Length: 478
Image (cartoon, rainbow, N blue to C red):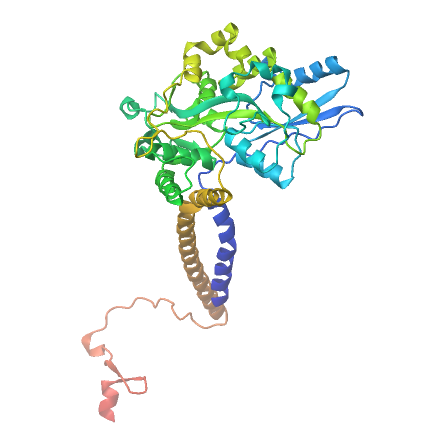
């Protein structure tokens, strides 16, 4: 018995780490990084390693413009040199940064967001290629997207796209009165439990709470981040999943009713599901710029410059802008009538008509707050990362405890049932063995007899001190 109990408890203990791992994943839906396949090329062919966001370039799908193939063709016609673009993608700025920082990947062109450009430049991770002097098509970039805070001297980057974050909801699943105020608080509406999607990266996820609460998204006060953390923790039980590009399928298919994502991605989603609606939250929202940069350790810097210049050419820039659905800072794109017609009046209004969206994003004194993300100090970055990890595991630990308790109860019940069955089996075996040796089984049922008359009734026996029983008649005779 003791051996069986010990074995069962040991088995349960061995299962706990696996259970914790499975449950800790909770309702998180992390997008795996898509690695470019190892490229085997003929001798003499240059390989350009490009690292970009998922779904962020026109790739030839269903006959669309194939940007990388067109660059390979263009470069060969221009120089006589064959080149192969080795293209791979990442899900978040943090994923891209971690990979480059660790030295696990070597790339020639990357597409970080504004705050990440600032961070990487400060850490010496970017190559200063001065696009105004080296990139001919840089002249077509709108002046509003030059000299921005993340690259004030226009040394490290060329703007690729820009946009804002908003709320996407399914009008067939969300009641009209719940979106009347066009607020971030829709993401905390209990009516839509398990139908809400949240960002799967700390910067954007925390920002949804910070804009709602009127907290500076670039605050260096840990108490501000604690408030945002508590708000996200309050939301967690309502969230179906923390997502990146998975949001496309979930919103298009109707498996989720509400999500927060980038305006440009909504343009893509609504083409697949006309019930989807978009708004910029009234409390304010993030304005971002993604740009093309060259890592400091790039092996083909000059080839990278050629690629960036090609990306700014009319055909490539328009095809990419149409494919990804984001606003483009390139005049060759947003002034093109074909592009305007393709995006439609509603699309152009969402992408390029967001003026005044952040008028209400102000501090307690009424001063405007910068809605764009800036680089953190190392201390704040570590603190935010810690809060994010705590958020992703907080409720999962509670679930793990309940699952563990349930397993122990199930194990105990199983042990009791098994022990009872085994005990009965041993008793049965014993009786059969005894019967085979000629002895009557101890519990064999006696034949039914006719009731005896009162005179024939045996005298009642009483217990004796030594445990035997004697009849009253025997006592009298003594």
